[in-house]
Image 1: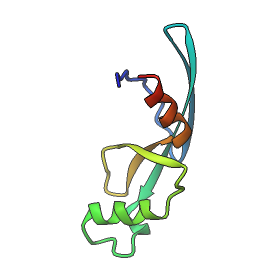
Image 2 (image 1 turned 90 degrees about the horizontal axis):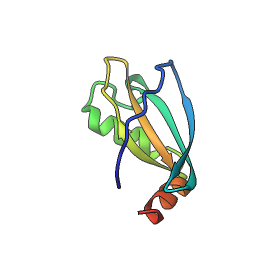
Image 3 (image 1 turned 90 degrees about the vertical axis):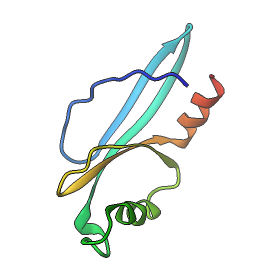
Image 4 (image 1 turned 45 degrees about the horizontal axis):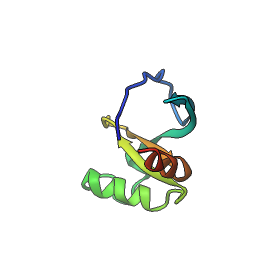
Length: 94
């Protein structure tokens, strides 16, 4: 799969991103979301951050797949998800 970067304005909280692209005259709708996961939501907020992320993602909607884990801050980690339907469409178009 090829990648392009699209700057998204940084806003606090959850972002719902829908993009329509045309590739070789074929339109595709892509659906992403960015959520902020706060460290203090973990059972053991002082534990290893990778364990915390795994714990937080275990409770997440299974219709979405992790696409990108952003740079963490002292308070949270931003995680970008792609909707499973969109992921399948992207795989078929390769």
